[in-house]
Length: 245
Image (cartoon, rainbow, N blue to C red):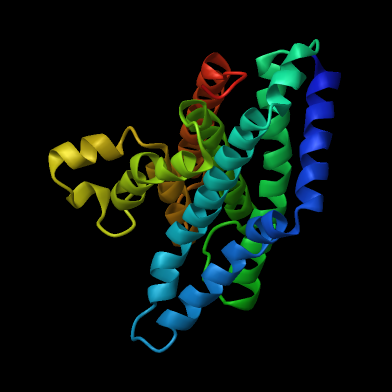
């Protein structure tokens, strides 16, 4: 691993995203728009539905957006031959993946800061815990989505196939994360499955912060999310191919 090479990859990815206005808008604007729509939809209904569902979805939107953008972008690098040329240089797969993860991690930080700022500052999401820690949870969720996107891109041959991995890698986590039904109220089998899915811990951390849970419990959940992201990056480095078959 070479730090200079990793940072060079990071700079290259950030430059590409800055020039791609549609991708940049999707990364930075879409989560804010979706949270605003959620607030608007629940605004006329009785009960604090926005405070109930908002935290879980605040952790989910950056995760999903990063998963899609990262998997498609990486696959585009391979299918265009750019990845083949990059790896022909004195650069390892780990340098490439860490450079990508760092670039999308920085974008995730900006994205999450905007989404948390809009949700808490403008839309009035009630948070009993620390707001800055809420931002940390959102950032790590987005990094997790980017890591899984890098991993699954190794198994796709077209951008369409990369998007098709969403029902397999993303939707089960959305259904079983505890947002719609508390994990403790699920059948034993489903609760056991949800316990090995990383988004469950991200939603637990977000909901715990909003409810004013002890910060040690939040950090414990975040630790699990970090481990999942690290494993996904390691698997991505092990399975990364230069060419699309």
